[in-house]
Image (cartoon, rainbow, N blue to C red; front, top):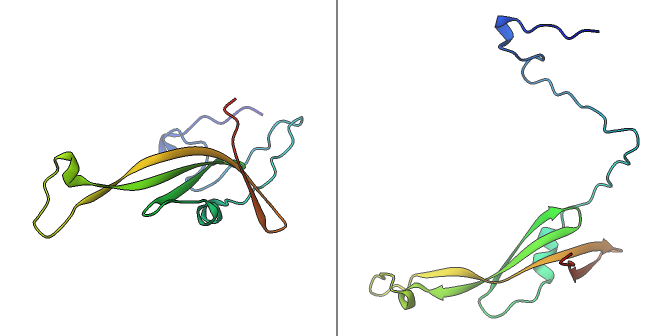
Length: 115
């Protein structure tokens, strides 16, 4: 069956706006297993120093990038500060890629290989 030529009214779109076309992958490819995003649970488990904040983002599958943020006093770096106030900023003091899985309600956290 030959594809229809777009009409001037549809401005080159072959499907009406809002229609989603789902195409299956190749027959030889296995579908990926759905993996829950564990970012919020990981943040609660990771060790941190005094005043540190930890953020964690899922990259793909079971792989995450976590950053440890440390407060820095802006006045130490020549920034202006109002009297009676201390302006602070946070800077990444540590960053790490992690491989995390969850089995029987327990997180298994290990550093991801650098390969």
